[in-house]
Image 1 (cartoon, rainbow, N blue to C red):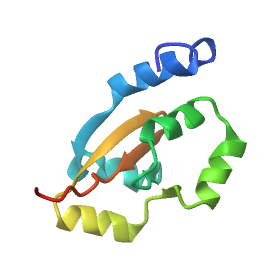
Image 2: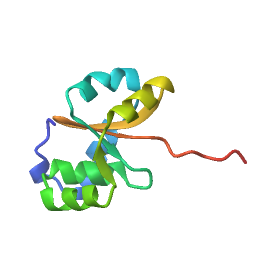
Image 3: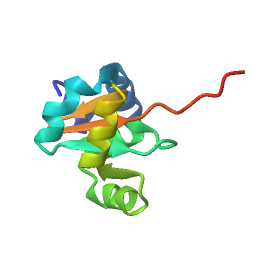
Image 4: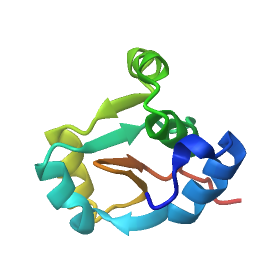
Length: 109
């Protein structure tokens, strides 16, 4: 990240990270999975909140998110599912980590 996050407020960091968030196809993310740096963010959890925690290196809060099942390392089963369904995922990079989140399913009205 080019900007020094330690000098940014959470609001400034959220705005910066929002600009770094993208919808990417799984095929573009597989190489990061192979390096073991992909973390899943559970649906219903704000990916930007997690990105801020990781940017701030807030280990205590990250541990709470992991313990609550809101953040976890991507597993081979996830990778297979995303590959088989040609999935695209919300993605934000907090180097060296890559956060991904599946889209929430919307019911047609």
